[in-house]
Image (tube, rainbow, N blue to C red; front, side, top):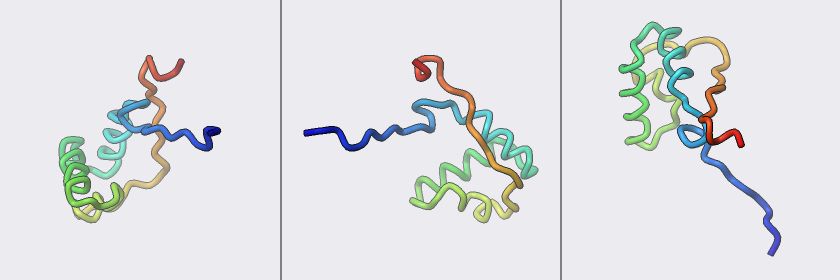
Length: 76
């Protein structure tokens, strides 16, 4: 059988999302801890991560949030 697809869990497996979410929190005018708690709630409620902004009652920050903090052992 030939391999047809390979799937990677990127967030917190291959890349560290800490800086990205911290920048997003600061841009939205909330603390990173508040945003992390909201993200935990979206996970617990099985809602999409972008639902966090309405749950917290803030506008989503403008821009595209990129993750560029690869874990050292993920690059090779």
